[in-house]
Length: 288
Image 1 (cartoon, one colour):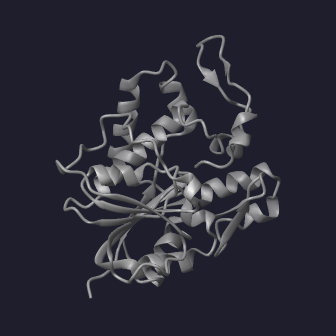
Image 2 (cartoon, one colour; image 1 turned 60 degrees about the horizontal axis):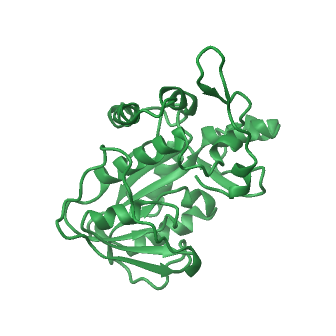
Image 3 (cartoon, helix red, strand yellow; image 1 turned 180 degrees about the horizontal axis):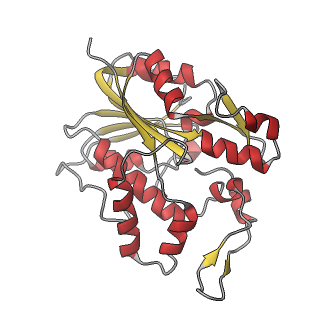
C-alpha cells in the first residue's frame, strides 16, 4: 500500500524501548502505519516478500500471457516476466514506467521456471476500463496493490477482468479488508458508521488524506466474483502477523528472521478474514 510520500515523510522516527532497544510505535495510527512508503522498513520488507512468494505460487507453470493492473509500484510484472510469461503492464501515464529491475529480497519466491524470460510490455491506459483489449486473450490477470479497492466501481472492474480472461484463465486480486476499514473509521471517530461496518453491503472508508477506499469481507468478495462469472478458488488474508510482531522479530535486520516469518505466513492455515488488513483471492473463469 503506497499512498503519497508526504504522509511518510512527516512520520516521526520510532523510539527505542530502554529495556530491549527494539523500536516501538505505540502512537502510530492504522492510517499512519499503512500509509508509509518506506519499502525498506521491517514490516514492508516482510509484506512484499510474502506478496512475492504468494505470486510465485499462483503463477501458471506453463508460459502464458498475463495482464498486470497493479500499477508501477507493484513488483509482480517483473517477477512474472522472469518466470517466462509475456506480461502487459498497464500504467496510468508514461512518466511512471518502472525502470528498476526486480530484486527478490528473500529465498522463498520460486526461481524462474524458464531459462528464457518472457516479454514485458508497458502500456498506458485506464487500469479499470480495458476497451483496447480483445475478449479472452489473457491467461491470467493480476490486480494486486489494492487496485480494486482504490477504484470504487469494483463490479465494473471485475466485469472487464472477466471479459479479457480466456476460459480457464485465472485472476489474482488484493483488496482492503473490513478490519482495516473499521480501524480507519475508529481513528476518525466515525462511530455510527463503525457500528454498521460489518453488515454494510458496500463499505466506503475515507482516509485522512481525503482518498476513499472500498473494503470487503471474504464473503462479499466471493459473492462479487460469482456475480461477474468467476469461480473463487480461495480467499484469505495476505498476512496474519501484526506489524508490531514483525518489527519486533526483525529488529536487528536478520535475514533469517525474515525468511522464517515468510515461511510462517505461507504455512499458516486459512484464517478468518477479519484478521488481515488486506484480502487476497484467486478466481478462475469457467471453461466455455
